[in-house]
Image 1 (tube, rainbow, N blue to C red):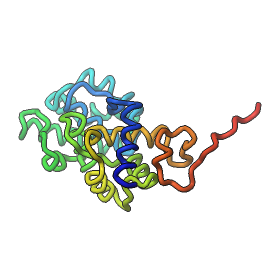
Image 2: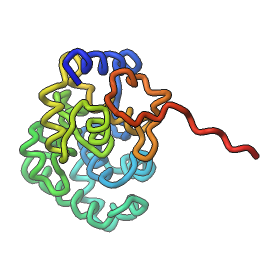
Image 3: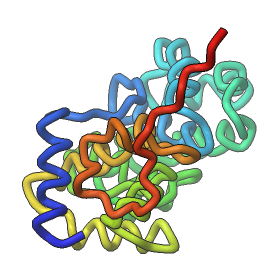
Image 4: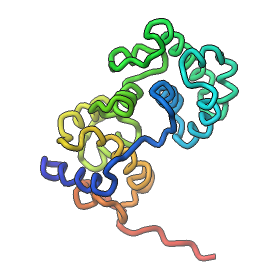
Length: 218
């Protein structure tokens, strides 16, 4: 995509959804951090289902430490990899209490030193909690970036670097949310629903699926 096409691409998405937000449910920055850690290789819907009761009970790192690893597992056992995730959440909570007074640091380099927190998780927290212009590349953003021609790269890091370079103002803060939602609901992995995509005119994907599947007769 050239510069003008990229601007048109995001202009259309912004007009349709001016203030996109993460679909993870949380009440504060710490709960957001926990939710994003839990969301690795899991759906937002699945995480939300598990954390509603958890977050009603736990609002701070100190409360999570008090709950303990076994107690946390009882809340999140429906989420994939819950054993390792519980271990990481308790460990990062202990660090937040010990080293940061219970606060989530507003620095990506510091965040990625916490157990279970990779660059994508740190980028989500920096963006959603602190309004920073970061580009969290999950499977949806990776697919949309490559498929549309917006940011082609063989690794999430490469896609992120290209988004950092190419996404213009005033779209930078919300860009990764628009891309996630586009990938989750329209530009799907197996069969992209190009026939109803609002940015089909800007997309460079050559094998566009222009006809919706026919409904099966009963």
